Length: 160
Image (cartoon, rainbow, N blue to C red; front, side, top):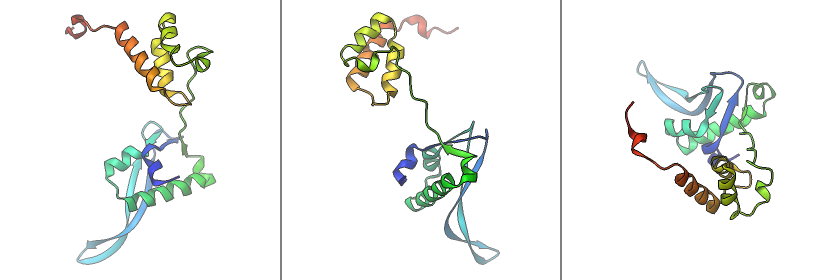
């Protein structure tokens, strides 16, 4: 795992709300007129069992040195047997193709078939998250078909 991986790292916990603290580099604080060296503390909060590490790092505006401390702590805790029971790396479920032969079809054949089958939304959702990666041409065509299928009318903006 690298510092760049922290931007997309999602952690999951068995607890709905969990506080995860990381000690950073030593900083000098003045208390009662005397210098006191203490480690910088970074507090991460799991919300609804999930922690988006990248969002929290951007929110806290951490430096590269701070990110290294966070990375080392997360790696250490994920390798620890006791901590691994409380938190782990979140892996989103693999999406299911909208029809059985979807992955075998050529990209140009997917949009017309999806339109004919009435599964444009399902095909678009799968194409954007498919394990092999999204095909930009297919996504663009499916978005065009979706826009054609749902034209915007004045009633869409009427107040209720």
